[in-house]
Length: 431
Image (cartoon, rainbow, N blue to C red; front, side, top):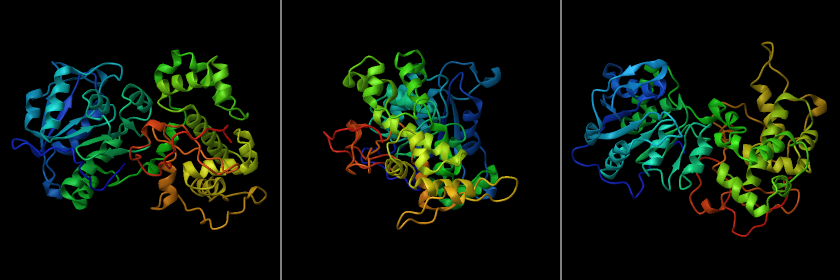
């Protein structure tokens, strides 16, 4: 949940007297990627007061014994060790070398102490795994690189992972998505500390946009089929592969369970433990994503798209599509083609014979990129860590989903989260 100003939770602790928020400690580990590591060094470590950017004091700390090797075999020598973190009011973990390795216990202890004393803890990209290992993300919303978000959700089930966001500000703990999203979060910190003018001045010096959203990035496109890396060796991998190859057919979760030679209850449990997502939620998301691709790349009518994506009716497609992307299929296609001119000339939104009449009361499709609901909703449409109300307007119109039922009492993360689903609601076949 990208916020302009963080609402510090009640659990946030008062900053210890020896810590100052403008003192920023950056925790480096061997094997960390140099790009992510350099982001906080550039943002907080260079004096740009001449440009109107307030100065921070940077402490670069080694999270483990030297030498620290990084991308390309470079060796880094940090001027400080873990003891310097005791002075910092902001601690940044820019990246972690491997999501399969446990971070050093001494570094985790230093992060816990800093948090207990009121320091702001920041994890960029895979740095979220270090924060999670320290227990700092328990019960909190967080994000990380889209490719590793399902693994983070599986390994730390108490963390509410939302891979749709460029960054998540939960007051005293902040996380960002992959690579360049770390710049967005660092700019957000400057904006929170010193206001929009300072952040805009810094953005001009860095030659980056002062404020981006996931819709600006087309961020949701990268989430199409993201599943944990471990699924390749799991027996469910074959079932998942079959489902992705047969989305044009009408089948439900019971069909997948049968192909896995499991009962429905066992299949649901295994699928959740492997992916962090309920199978019905995942299947609906994949069908909508397939519809999205066909709307972008073909001239099939909406009725034809519905059939080719396994929905039993165009009405069912429209309901799921609007719920996930915030617009009807026809409006999405028109907006997509309006921003994808070919041969230097604007392209017609829809061929006349394929055009779908706008639904009653529907706004004309806005061109994405502007500050409108559609562009924001598109970014919020995907992600395996947010509950979706899997309603089928073609039948009763009532929500029915078992997706993340255990997390529903918590506040939903990010924009456009689905409505809570009441316990005991039954699930029906997709479409």
